[in-house]
Amino acid sequence: MAKDLSMCRLIDTYAAVLTEKQRSVLVMYYDEDLSLGEIAELEGITRQGVRDAIKRGENTLLELEAQLHFADRFRDYSDLAQKIRTYAKNILAYADSRGYTSQIKNSAQGIVEAADELERFVGEG
Figure 1 (cartoon, helix red, strand yellow):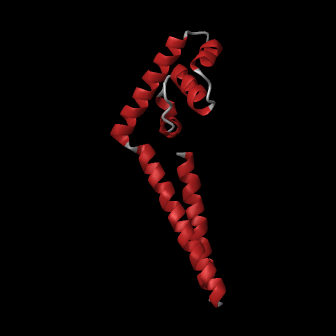
Figure 2 (cartoon, one colour):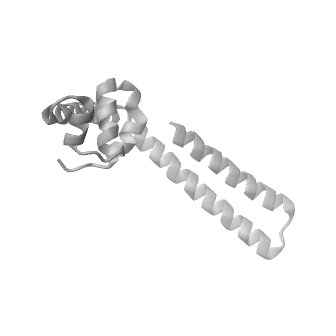
Figure 3 (tube, rainbow, N blue to C red):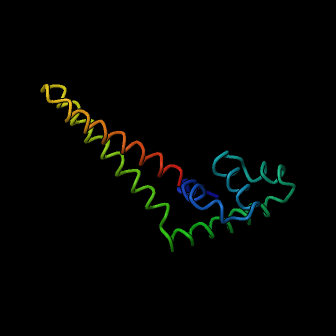
């Protein structure tokens, strides 16, 4: 079974709606990179049981994302925060090189900090 690593993002976003067994198995499979056999041994179930739990969990995650698009939105917000941070740092560098007022520097630094805060907020989603 080939791993779709975008599942990690979906697990992070929607883990609370999965059953405990699905969440546990998906985390071991995707985040901890354990094999089906290793998970089966840890969980006391068959490899087929592990595979079924993974497939059910994946289907649940994919259906939720298709309806809600939360994971995509979080990724987009994170990308936007990175762009804002980059532009603000460019302003800071330009202001430093040109000897601009502290007000411009402070405003640019405030933008960087706001982008950092947005990134933390999105990361908690």
